[in-house]
Length: 242
Ligand SMILES: [Zn+2]
Image (cartoon, rainbow, N blue to C red):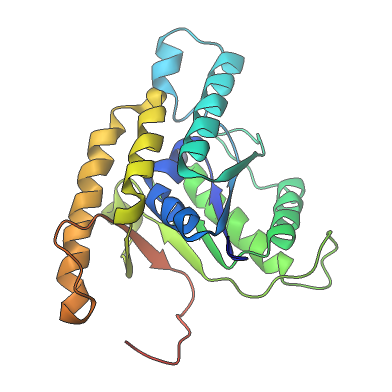
């Protein structure tokens, strides 16, 4: 077990599975602690199959909560629910404060969240704004919340469902081959959105091909690598360029 931790801030339960389940599984395999902050249950916007079955709101939320808990367990991560509702997810001072508290408790080495734009689901952009604001506030000694102020953990935006329309330009391709079995297991838990398993399996292979293409002979990635794409918010800080 390392003393490093990763914080994943997800608008809905599916997002942390489809978009960054591999990164979570790889971090867990390395011995890092991973905590997922799930802002809503995606009960209105991402649970169509349950509404079509005749579930009511409470049943939909309970079902999505159960799926999210089982998916997080499959990935080896902890999960905390904030139950702020979706369509719309709304930024409130109370939610920001709770997330500042989470940042300070966890002291994450890295943060994963949504990209800043998504015309298909405005909750994703809102979740990005909330996550970024909570991170900045958690850095400020003048902001009153439990725990010590945090440093400057890098933020990686995970890949939206239709990246081009979101202006998403990957600048990191993460080899998640080692975590792929766990990601597959987590995806298979998401019964309310089971149509997406094939899509995200194919995307992982495509991003893996791109990772191998971009890695050069020095890294020597095998050609059957599976990958996830990310976009950094802040500059990479390093003493070596390669
Ligand atoms: Zn979502």
